Image (cartoon, rainbow, N blue to C red; front, side, top):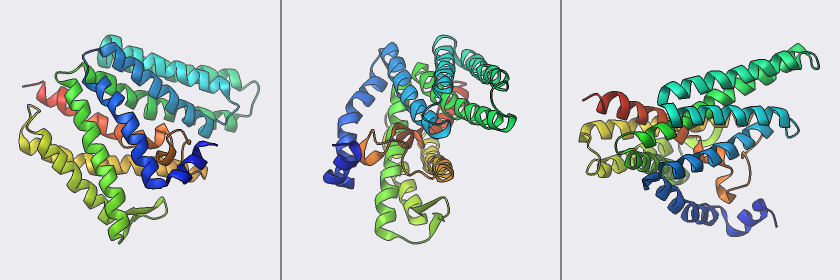
Length: 279
């Protein structure tokens, strides 16, 4: 029995909740625990699995050379962020893009220019979109109260995504962007905003941040996270696929689950590092 058959037997809603119940405890523990190395290893695995999904969809299942280079680039960015912070993160990204450039020069002797340029563009997109954005989780974990901020990020994003799913299905109404994602609605977005703001209000009691700032952040995360979801939907629409994989039953793949989170991690880190730490 494959993942898709199992998800169908369980039912869409039940399989989504079952996977969430199984995965949330270890995810939250890795965020909250003081063992920074544990969280780093956890992110390496999640980033690697997401890159595997991305690679087989955008490069093709047989381009193991590009998958190897992509994972090497991810390791460079992740280890740079882990060891040297934002400077190491940036240097890791430069190294990752240099690997892609080197591959381009080597591949021109075997493949046509347009094919190589197309692959390089996808490789560069993946390094910025996946490796670079994923590495902000590593940076945020090192910040003051980083574990609590990560849990807030997860709670606000998941609440917005879940509320948007159920409110949108219940109320229907105008579509957000029907050509990209026909099932996402304006009512769902508003439900997601309400849920994210509510979570932010609760976390204002635990985070050393003003109530108004967190409320504004919650509003922004719901909208920005929805944009991240739509961006992934646009890429999948271009590839004519529904889910990035069947790893997570009713949730699709790791890329499907992190599409909003990797967009939302950047403004949360920016707030913590540039605004809160400056005072």
